[in-house]
Amino acid sequence: MALSCRHAWDHAGRERRLASPPMPPPRLAPGVTSESDRAVAPRPGTIAGVPEQIEHTPVLCGLATNPSLPPELVDVLIRDGDDEILTDLVERTDLTRAQTMSLVVRCDPRMIALLVRHGLAEAEPRHFDDPAIAIQLISGGLGPPEILARLAHDSDPAIRRLVADEVRPLPYEITRIFAAGTDIRLVAAVAGWGELPADVARALARHPDREVRSELASNPSGTVPPDVLAELLTSGGDAPITTCGACRANPSPNERCHTHSAGLDVIRSYALRNESTPLAALLDYADADNASDRAAVAAREDLPPALLARLANDVEDFVRTTVAENPSTPVDTLRTLARDTSANVRRAVGSNPDIPLDLLFDLSQHTRLPLRSPRIDRATERELRGIAVSRSARVRALAAARPDLPDDLSATLADDPDPGVAKHLADRPRLNADDLRLLAARHGPRLYSAIARNPNCPPELLHTMARNSQTVQKALREIARHPAAEPRTLILCLNDQEARQQAAANPALPVDALIALAEGPDRRDAYTAATNPSLPVEWMRRTITGHASN
Image 1 (cartoon, rainbow, N blue to C red):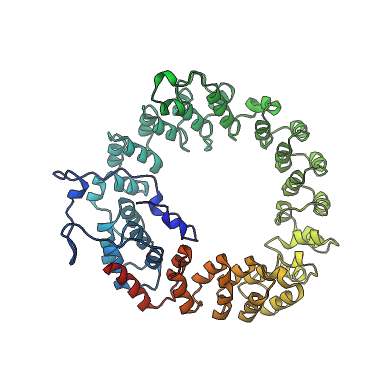
Image 2: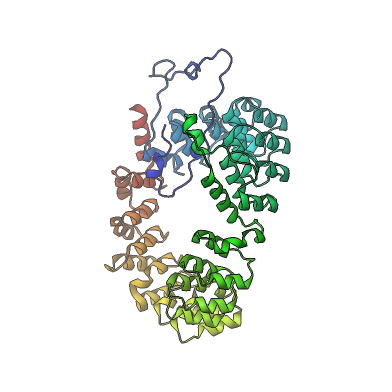
């Protein structure tokens, strides 16, 4: 079964439980020669031993998560739904114990483990007989050590890889055995672990495969010894590389790689970008021919000021941008970069948390800076009050974007005549309905999106904004998701595709419009509408029983 279909209609983008690393096939009981030999109790109206399932649709997947779905309809979906529907049912928080146990009987191993780990079912000895379930339970902290040891020594490489992918931390002895194995994929996974023992890291630095060393060189955990990273950077590892991914993909020995110089460059590149690589080992790369390597050096926060100043004169914009973002860059160098011809470099200077306030203010007059300034977030209250009364609206906007303003400053900046300042305050809950009406009247559609995000926005103002022909799509989406939006207001939001998604999830949407979306051709609309708790129970019943009878 394809596992990606729901992404086409799930607007929330929730991670699919079934999209976990692939499970090995379950082991069959003695005397069972194939999966089809498993006994299946026939249901009335079906051919004996061949159960019919309700195939998932956007509507059925949505109904499976709908909090208003009656328990008897949940039972129908548990009994007859396919794997995709069962995956959605597992996410419900109102399952009875009987429903949970029915799911345990029908579910994919990953879902059984999920139920156990969520406390909805109990781990049973039989669960540890199936490697797929056992690994998921062990990764959740359940299961005795001897089971993990058995799985780590399993003859099936897929099971050993699953242990490496899922279980953390692994005992040292298992880690050492995995790292010394012949399964390159498994060894490469070990090289990227965050709890890698130093002696294992030293051995992997001399592994003959390029991918293993690359994983080790890019290991972000800080557990790889610095001298190992330095070795990988300077030489790619002392021992020669004899295999790589291209080699293993080519079945013809005579056509395999004869040189791995490109592989060595990849290893060095990863080590260069590893924050744990010793500074002394990478200083020579400040003059590298590759601008990307120079930028990797420029990102280090432990560089000497003189080197940062030299890199600030690099011919490539993105190298200078990296220097401008570096918190260790000296102020004099930042002032030089603030006059750079590249707007990206100047914006990076504005994002530097240590930029002097006077330089930040000067930059704001001719460069579009990010809405949030790290330097303003660190400003003292005295500095903030000075910024809030600046003659420059762009400077006042920098203060307005700070989320923890004192109440009196929030009130002052909310009344600012410049919409670029006021918009930063329009969504703050401290503003009441009258404040929001005043902002909407004063600044018009430019503030509608921010006003609609405010939980205190009154229903009539939401409706007025939705009716305005100048209201942008972003504002319509905010209006459609607002809990105070009235049915008539939500109808106005249905013309925009993304706003329609928000309206379909809003319980205030009229029932006839909700059903029309659920039965319409758009899969995302259908799924979202089916999750809406305002759907009539009778419509849910007809929909599910209709699919069951079909």
